[in-house]
Length: 536
Image (cartoon, rainbow, N blue to C red; front, side, top):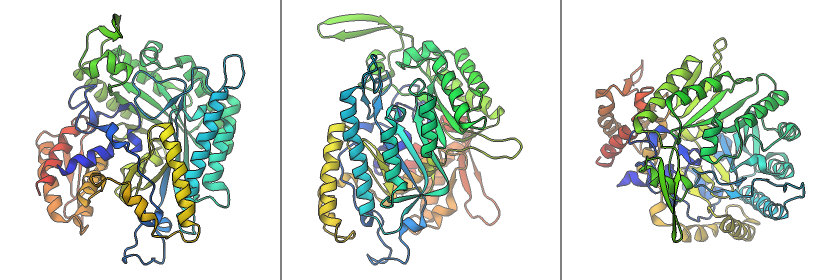
């Protein structure tokens, strides 16, 4: 069906690069069970060469240059993937490279030579990918609304690596990008992976927002998740953030629900502790656990189907029985989601997206939404991405880089050679096209229908919802698509899971899901819309 491809594509978007996910892909069908929103996520990570910007940004007049390039007309985001982790957590199945509990340095203080070599190779590859973007773009620098260093654990990267990358992105004369004045620059950091000196250097580089990988404030839960840090590391990290960034520090925390051993009482306590942190987290992301095949949890819990305490694991010819805490039931996970929504909203957190909460100042009304994540949910949001497994979306073309580090390094080496060969004389050299088309599979080609379904899914994740007038006014969609969407949305209206708002001067208005129950069952509602649009 037409909507299958967009579901697969969306599962590879940067907001899906965690081994936990929003209720959109779990709670409607039970915690820990893979649903239609990510049935074959690993299949999306195929090697695809990076097209030139001329390929990504075709002009409207059949190939002639417009007065302004698209880089001058659109604000972009940039995602940078740093894959290093101390170890693979029990729930993680993503593009990371474990480097050991000791991190970049051994316990005796000696530099980890294996890591240093790998880091040098990876840094070179990132710089080469930035070079390719610069070589294939127009003469004007590309405006960035946001930069996001994700992982992995970017705070494990040496400071020299972070400086080199930041310099290449927007500081040097040859940089392809420029930062807008109010740009948001975020780096993910794990508790226990940085000190005061490191954090000070990070601020001096231009990072103005920290995303802290807390996951839980309960040591027993952290152990269950396979995390290295403990709650004391969280509190110490937040105190360092206060010392470096001040009492109004712009930082976010991640928390996971639906994890083994988490009780309803434990979840309420976690949220209470989270909002009591000082400085206050200006953003909180809440995710429900996804049990993935190939992970430790996938083995222990049989991809979410095993909920007994006794888990049997076969290792070679030996079978050993371990005792693990049971996963919460689907009903308990739904309760956790509903409680979190109501509780955080009562504490002045704006629930602006299924899994995202931004603190809103009660006096000024200012809301601290993630500028970077909002790009992913916009009608025409576009972002660059560099690094192993990273996924970009430019002019409706979404593509993923290789997930394995060796494959990525080989890919970027070939890419740079082809870029140098074909674009030194002319960035619009059409000879780029053969190598691009020869490496793209026909089933990955995006259609206008795919783009519509992409918009439906991403916009219904948000509190603002989907603008039907915008869709009706697009020649490629039109009123027939609006009618199909409304037919699919009837289920939400009948069950009071959604609402339609038609304001003055609007013909079709907006549709949006109610908080929290509409978000809880968004999986079902969006599936219903997809069926209707597919039959149009």
